[in-house]
Length: 172
Image (tube, rainbow, N blue to C red):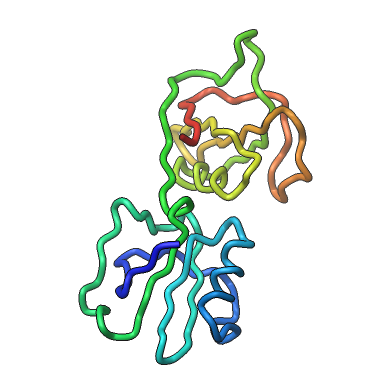
């Protein structure tokens, strides 16, 4: 865990949770560790307020700028360093296929942009990368690639055994 006695300008979206439900930082840290989508939390020591933040929704440790006016105000920002940076490497353009020319298994959905597609992958430990194709008009198409096995499913996503052309990225 890392902690700053300030708030980032972009802390990310707040996760739905009872902000008064915790009384100790260690309990909030454990709650966050147990939820892959949690990157960390804003905490006010004097008021015992906790605001858990969604991973991939705005806070990036490497590029964060901090609000100097929050220093000394009682606010702290605690974050899991390994979740606070999501980097992707562009692997190429075209359809995502294996060495035999077969597309990998994955979950497919329309109506996402490239950033949202990557964020969906970041939330899932089974996701090995994304295949995104932007549309000329309307939403793009996103495929979250699995290790070749179908997972328990994702509501609103269709499981397919193939990729869908476009720019290919994978988490580093």
